[in-house]
Length: 237
Length: 261
Image (cartoon, rainbow over all chains, first blue to last red; front, side, top):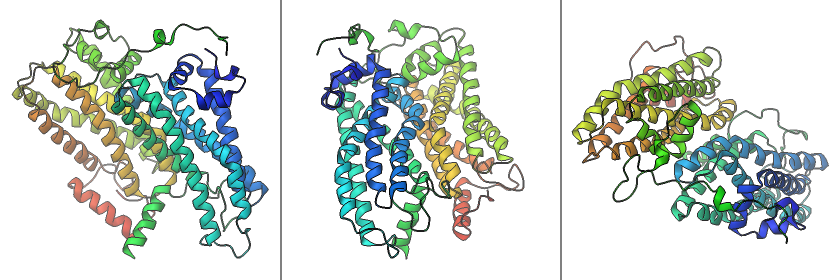
């Protein structure tokens, strides 16, 4: 068995690994695996962030390139304890470190997909009409950019979780337990991840503010409240 | 590729699969598995056991000297609920930083104490042969598992506490976390109950409804837990549905304020 870091082509070895190999890595070489996954997240999600932020300018590209991996790592750490508790309660006997490694691995796959899609994202950004004084948050070009870039993130997330499912099924020996664990982790990570992204906003552009790392009111409101209020306005107005 | 880092076979390092909490068909007897007979000497082992080997906790509750384990589980429940209470208190700050933890911990313990007699009677009516101390231990296990899980939710709760000013939103979020944690706690209780030779689950199911109602009413009886008020404890009496309704309508009339019950 070879640790992931010792492979001559670690990315292809990681992405092409069978569930049995993933389990071997998690059981034996956690430090190597965690370092590799964290690096993949920083590079993959970081390059996608750069491509997204460049629409506004180089500083926004740098900030988004830092914030996107940061959001993923904070979500993994913030939910680490909860995910580690939920796994055995739902029938998957893993330690906290192992559950952290499994979740990190799933995010690493998603980040690699994002990294691979960053040239495409850059192409979309390049083809989008540039930001002008007349651009507003309801401008079609901004909406299209948001939609396309969010679509890529969703696609990468789906692929990351699809890769995780066979590993969980192998580990538990039960498709139902694997599905429950995956759904519980997914729900928790989506819930916290959405709010962390909300705190770290803006990722693309804030029409009212100059370029800055985090907006002036990071802890003002929540992602879900905003969605709920917007939905309420749509329904009741 | 050559194997550069020889390691023992993975199968030797794999932890044993977790047996289902509620086994289908004929249930195994507690203690059939030798690992279930291992003592639970300290808090760390107790946490590990309730998460990974709940049957070990159930077996130990039937042994002489189970009082030590019960005391340990109750103490841990108090500590965990105090910690989660601090997170709840950060929403309003000030007095609530100490009042919310005290109210949550005491509310949880009082709710359990109020419901213990009915749990014992209902389990007896169901034909269970569990002794009162075992039932008390299962209830302590429920509280411990519930509060440990609340600690797991604490980072998420904290980030939302800092982000929103909406009292109903935070109240709903804490209730959702409490509800999820309670479901896992009740699963533990039901698993313990299924090993007590009970003929029917109707009694336990009835008790679950009573326990949930008592717990949510306790949040109203000890209000404010999340927001603020002139007095630490309420001056009037309210049913929890009326209280929640009042909070929602107050939010709609004057949004973005924490200065309400």
